[in-house]
Image 1 (spheres, rainbow, N blue to C red):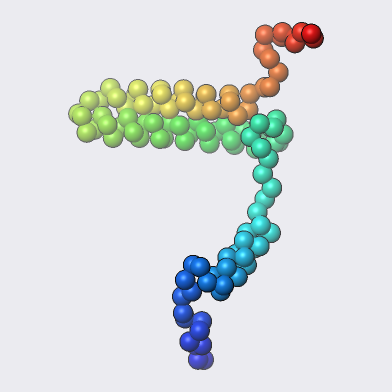
Image 2 (tube, rainbow, N blue to C red):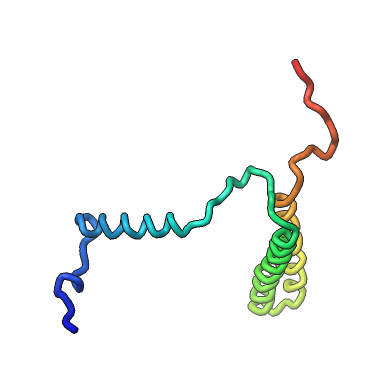
Length: 115
């Protein structure tokens, strides 16, 4: 099998061949992409999707901030920084969960006045 010399040549970004290649890649990516909803819309996922999302936020917060706390504590030879990082990670993950999955209905029950 012989390789065509033109197939091995890299095309500079501004050339027509690079533009055609980019258009082909974009069309494949658009065809395979799942539709996304805006962040300000209400969450309509199933219960298991919600549970897995909450679990992943909690674990990610604990691992990220706990890991940072462990690294900083190890570097400074202070053992108390690791639990502080874990607590901050849990607090940050609870904040993100409430912002993402929280209700859009006002908690106080106040109704808007008509003018």
